[in-house]
Image (cartoon, rainbow over all chains, first blue to last red):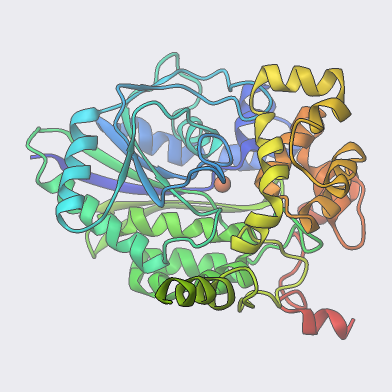
Length: 279
Length: 148
Ligand SMILES: [Fe+2]
């Protein structure tokens, strides 16, 4: 059977990808952050799974006001980096893992999660930046991916609890997948940030650190936060943090926190990353 | 009879006239069913800039390209003048507005600074973030903004 080895949470700020793509990681603005990410990258080198389930959101790239599903699983063989307004990032295309993707869809649907499927969605910074954070700039990505897209930008959004429950269903699906493979799961987006309006630039380190503490030791506490509380306390776009609940829900109740990084700023965002290992 | 009742409830119970418990968060414009309807065409224009061919058409003649969308004149002039805060007030969402600042090959901090209260230059916005960002205290509700 497949084994879920660990979960990672990371922000997916486009500026981080651009810093790597344009060779700016040694500049004063970025240096400290990328040094802080070294242990995370070392962990990934030592713990590369066969496939990563990556929970992300689309930013007006494939999904729009015309058509938006709450949860969408990428079931394609291959995914390309998206043109989201400035040309696609020059990063490798991403190999899907349709057997696992379909197994997750079938297993979760049987538990009454009505998931949409998509075979050819291009993947924007919400997806490709976490890959670059974990694996740097390889010629090919070292693991296949199963994209899970969550609507966190067009209200009404799924609740924080619903996201956690979906994660639990994904965890059960992985546990019943018959291949002997190792699987990782990533939650992306956040932490506190607001990109629009007069209040742009608001961040909340106390809220973020509490969220990270809870993720480690009391994950149900993070399922009781309303969208309004996220938006008020962590900025309008801080609500992306509900995607980390999907990752956490898939893991066991007791986990080992083996890495945490918190850094302000990345562009207008409080950057956070965490790695939680199943025991 | 039942149909009328349902339609009424949709419009006046859940829809675009209902107040939301996040309406008192200051300077914040979430994309919900109210902004969705107000901003549909301007957001679809912004999203079209994902496409290189559309970017070329827009670059060639901004006004002519905008005229192919069913946007209001206010929305069009806010796009032409790059008045980003006005765009949000007219229904655009910031994830979509991103496409326009990218089209201009400007860093997003230029757009952020322009929307901020008070207005900030690129350098000033960058410095505010390096200094720890805008604090949450005093910025949770419009009540706090009224007190100055
Ligand atoms: Fe995002």
